[in-house]
Amino acid sequence: MGTQSEASGRFESITEEDGMEKTREKMSKLLAEKEVSAILALKMSHGHPTPYVFAKPEELKDWVTDETRRYPLTKILIKIARGYPDQVIGIPVRGCEERSLIELFKNNQLRMNKVKTIGIVCTQEQANYCRCDRPFPSQAEGAELAKPVEDISDMEEVERLSEEERFQFWMRQFGKCIKCYGCRNICPACFCPTCTLEDGALVKPGGMPPEVPIFHLIKAYHMADRCIDCGLCEEACPMGIPVRRLYRRVKRSIKDLFQYIPGEKAEEKGPLEFLGDGSYELPGSGK
Amino acid sequence: MFSESLERFVNYETIVTTCTYCGCGCGLLLEVLDGKVVGTLPQKDHSINQGGLCIKGWNAHEFIYDEGRLRKPLLRKNGSPEEVSWEEAFDTVATRLKKIRDENGPDSIAGLTSARCTNEENYLFQKWIRAVIGTNNVDHCARL
Image 1 (cartoon, rainbow over the protein chains, first blue to last red):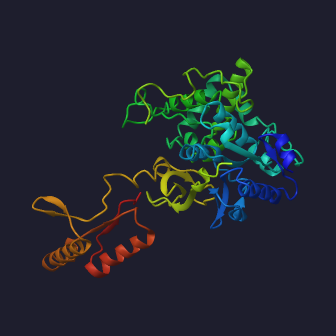
Image 2: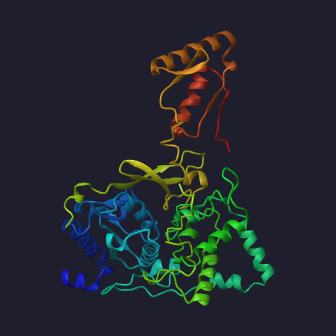
């Protein structure tokens, strides 16, 4: 196993019929041999899958990959990595999580040599549920891969409308927004220290959040070259606004204009990145 | 490989709990990093909120370490609040309430309880107002 792991590089995967047990063994080995100091994954706690950092191999008996209840683990990893910058932390990644990691590496939110990924593949059921066109990470040898689901019918449904109808559709949807910021908070590709939606220079502190549709369009613009189409935003929306189809649309524009697809290559910078070193921190602001 | 840094285990967990802001009772996870609450996540498998939260829920952790949070009982003496022992605080409240009730009747007192308490504490409070004070003047801040 050892040589095979080395050959496959950072993204490794073992998932077959008993894939979960094999992955558990592998993670246990990584911890026991101190290749990683901890693993961020889901732990079954009182009957609920919850994000947790496993630091000891014996704890991994409670590890779960709860298929339809994804948490933004890669985003949580940023928080942990800031507290433990010198340690290598392991993380099991599905396709969307790997794409999110690539965006986070690219934008200097995580260091590639401090993150050890363990690839896991999604079941066909999960891929169908997420309408995911890449339900597996880049390295998933020996695993039974779910078929990609190329379903953009949600976006096309809106595209077919006339401009006026489309505008009305979106205004009706955005009008439901309760400004919980959940779509931003859960997003594993959102990380700016000062969010444009809260920047004192743009939005009056202590006042109301930006109005409809500005709020949503600011976010759509910002996610255009970063959205990895995981769909967590839409899952987190308490009002059922179909935000994912909006991000799919802007993502397509970026592809058409710049032939750029977010989450694919770590060495490729996003075409909309223009604020310098990638920290996206405006001078004089920040918390 | 990094034996020294390994001495300090990465310590992160999330605690399943219930939002205390209103009567909905959304499920949330409090993120605890090195013993300190650093964030809130919506509980994805909760039957009420099903993975969503409102803005208050998303920020449910923010008051925990607020400097303005009361940690000890204060009693107004000579016009300004002063720190006192719990014993003195309870004693003052009990004595004054009893005096007001005896002089002006139980309906001169009303109780207003809080969404920051549990269901059980709220039950206990209304029971106490009704059975001990003897009035039906009881309400709750989260009667949305």
